[in-house]
Amino acid sequence: MNFTKNICFFLFLILLAITLQFTSQATALGDVITITKAANVTKPGCQTECGNVTIPFPFGIGPGCFLSQWFEITCNASSNPPRPQIGRLEVLEFTDYTFRVRNKVASQCYDQLGNITEENPVSTNVGLTTPFSFSQKNHFTLIGCDDFALFLSRFQVNFTGGCTALCLKPEEVVNGSCSGVGCCQTSIPKALKYYSTSVGSMVNNHIKVWSFDPCTYAFLGEQERFTFNGVSDFMDPNFRNRTMASVPLLVDWVVGNLSCSEARSAGVLACQANSECVESDTGVPGYRCICNNGYHGQPYLEPGCQG
Image: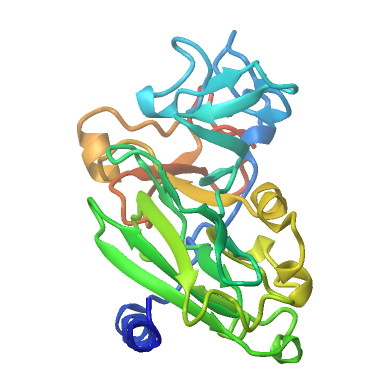
C-alpha cells in the first residue's frame, strides 16, 4: 500500500470513528457475584465445578443440569485442571449477569526492513441464536506506533469500527493513556455477537519505529482489566499471550428470548420464590432473575432466594 493510499485510509478511519463512535454503557445491574455462592448452585446431583470454575444454574454440565441447550457446559478434561467451555469458548468465571471467556489477540510483526514476519487476524462469536452478547464493558484496543485496526461485525448487528495509533519516538508514548498515541481504544454497540479484527501499518511497515515497536496488537477485552504500559508493551515478546491470559472477554447472558411479562403469561418464567424478573438491557431479547432486597442465593432454582 503506497503512502497516498495510507493517508486516505487514515482519513477514512477518522471519519469512521467520528460517525460510528458509541458511548460505552455498563449494564445497569453491574458485575455481581452471588449466584455461585448459593447453597444450591446447581440442580441436585449435578456437577458443581469444572476445574477451578463453579458452574451455576441455569448453566450446567450433563443432561438435565442446564436450563436450555444454550446453557450447556462442556467440561474439557484433556487439560489440567479441566476447563469449562461453551461451544469453542473457554469460560474463566461466571457472575450473576455475565461470564468471562479467554481472549484472542490479533497481531502483526515486522523485521527492520518492513517485511511481515507474523500475521494473526482473529474472529470470535458467541452464537447468533444464543441469549449471549459481548458486553459493552469490553473496549476495542489497538497498540502500536504506525498502525490501524479494523473491527467488523455482521449478522444481527452490522458494525464497522476502527482505531489508529501513531507516534514517532518512544518519548511520545504515555503509560496508561489510550488516546491515539501508541494506544487507541473505542467502544462497541449493544447486542454484538460476532466480530473479526485485522491490523496493518499506516505508512511504512514500522521501518521508522521498529527499534522500539516491532509489532502491533489489537483485541476486544474487558476495559478494566487492561492497563497500557507504554513502550514496555511494544517490546514485550510475550504481550500477545500475556494479554490473552490476563484480559478476558466479558459476555452478557440473559434467559430465554421473551420479556418478563411474556414469559409470565406463557407460564415459563424461570424466576423462583423471593426473586424478581428484570428485563434485558443488553440489546438481546430475554430477562434475568435477581433476588429481592434482603434475600440472596439462587433465583433460578427451588426453593428460590433465602432471607
